[in-house]
Length: 255
Image 1 (cartoon, rainbow, N blue to C red):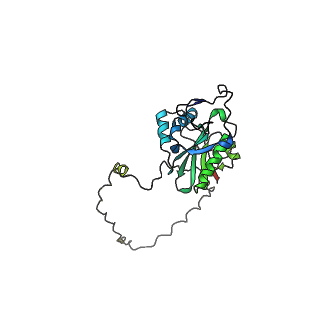
Image 2: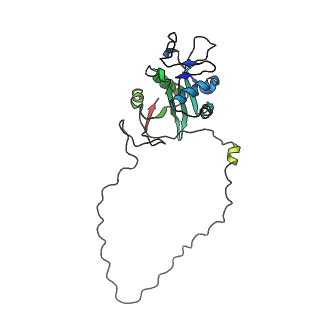
């Protein structure tokens, strides 16, 4: 995979990697927000697009929405030997607030450079995310995965329930957005409540009283209704699906 941090090209594929370019040192990796390193936007977009192809303009726009108010995109960076050279973007993940769960964050778009997978960089990325979230007062992380259940289980994640990530967390909508909504219709006159006057039933003609009706039949016994809610998921199968209809597993971890 070829990354282009700024104007410097870097080839991470082992078959094309120069012999004098060692793999990044885990101890030297740092985790930094994308919006604090705008010069690395192109390299980060290349990294994500190799895993999930998307138009470059759309990817850059999505990364450009990162902010301290969430959603927030984080990059796992490896420093270069000299300050003049841009760091290597080793991995990426996005954090979003969760609807009705003020102490939770949703982890999305977790990716590590293909040539560096299986060497501990994914674990380092997830551990950095947990420390980042915990330092800001969050206590739980949620995520989804298709085929990395064992990886996340080894990190302490357990199967959980779906949550809704928030695209933006502003407490007050901007006036321009509010004006885009149609105005409320003019209030209608109050409806008159129906009359509750009890009407007397016509008296029955005098005569011999009718016999009482026969008793109602006993109700048929039925089996108890099934428990409410979806069936539980396991590490082998799940009832949840993504937008493409593929099985997806929801996982969570207290931090």
